[in-house]
Length: 214
Image: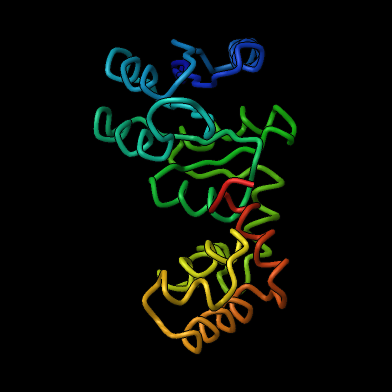
């Protein structure tokens, strides 16, 4: 008889956490060994329990969730990480993949998708819930292996942040120690790579991707 997969849940919303614990404990073959409200506690419980899977909410106080995912694997190499989030933007998806996580579940999708994700990564696979998979599929030229942000150079990304803050090209140039003509070149590249053709669209994209606060 196959043993249960042990799971740690980390989410700073107690109602969500309680619902997830009930869902997973009622699912055959799954057992929640700890539920915590931040990533720091998740790391401590990982060291104590060595679970099969850690489910991390992305937006929690304390240590960055993506950094925590990396540390989980350092503490317990056999433990897999799944991200659970109310957002599925390019930036988060890219960061999740870079952290070594094997799954990403959007909170707006069917809760049973989290159960499926845990079972999939427990068998050595990966799992992206419906909304996340659809987002990955629309990332231009990436075939599911990256995001639009990964197309940008560091200077283009810096330019994008300034644009989102409402700065003009003349204001951006001295901040980046480049000419207005070079700023204009970066803006053109941004519009081409992101397939967005006005400054308002660029600003909205930067905010949506969490590059600056709205």
